[in-house]
Length: 400
Ligand SMILES: Cc1ncc(COP(=O)(O)O)c(C=O)c1O
Image (cartoon, rainbow, N blue to C red; front, top):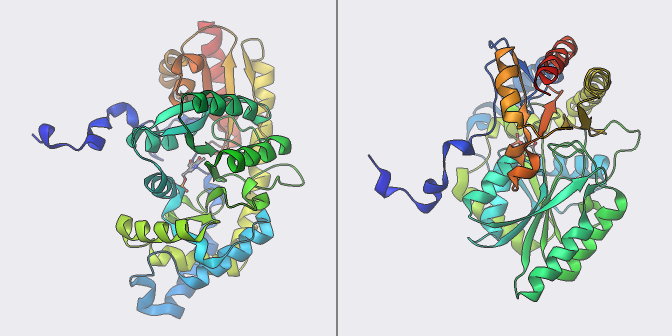
């Protein structure tokens, strides 16, 4: 009925924009498809106690409007938390509380991107970030990821190539630590190199650190923002993967005052502010050590699940696929040794109760990722991981 009334943005929205599959909890399906946390990592009892405390302490104010960019006391807690855990020094004026990092991505792209701007993404990359950028009608430059993260030297080549045509790259979106969808972590050398390029060629690095606190090594790598002295990095993170995604709590940290002010204003237009109750819950959970405890548990559980999945892939699938070696996060990325579209494999495995996400959904150059798939070990139980990989191995044997 409204077809001829749609905005340019709405016209871009097609069914294939919805690429995130989250089955209902009642579905009897083994879900390797979505980056949904293991239910055991959500500290329900602790959050219940915190919520009761919040209501007692703040009364109706816990359900009143909150400052649109976040409570100052919450921002202080977040500042202490990111300094302690990520080595990131912040200035409270430059921290913007957002309703999940997904809103952060939308907000950041509204601040920086016009239609036709050149945006660099990793290939493969986080599909819902790609969709946010698609909505802004950007021109993508996709830089491949290997086992040391984005191939930054290829980025420099691209910058020079576009430079010769009088064009510039405006924004680089990266997930340096435990990347979605490959699970790889960018080596320190490349992290420094990327920052140098941003300083030299004046583009913004959007650093999405959704999984930075869920790494499995002794010493977690620090974000690029922690070594950024020039204010080239816009840092983005979230409580979704370390506490509870339903709280919809994330934050942006930006080095530059003027940009922060614009973000504060934009945030107001977007939703008048992140849920007051969620803000007070997260603030209290941070103060009481609930978040630290949840992270420790989540890390050990995801490490175990990663080990189970990787070991089984090596046992059951090694003839047919190669895989990444995730050092954190939720995902591993498989590439088949033969030219088969993994959408077809998904059709078959779905019939047998196992879903995953086909590689092409994460790629700008879809043809390069047809034979790939992302497997998430975050949500299924350890036993379901065993059953699911076994089924997947059967399906692959039939097809290959
Ligand atoms: C890399 C990355 N960024 C951002 C998000 C969005 O998370 P949220 O909006 O829940 O913080 C996700 C969720 O899967 C993600 O994987």
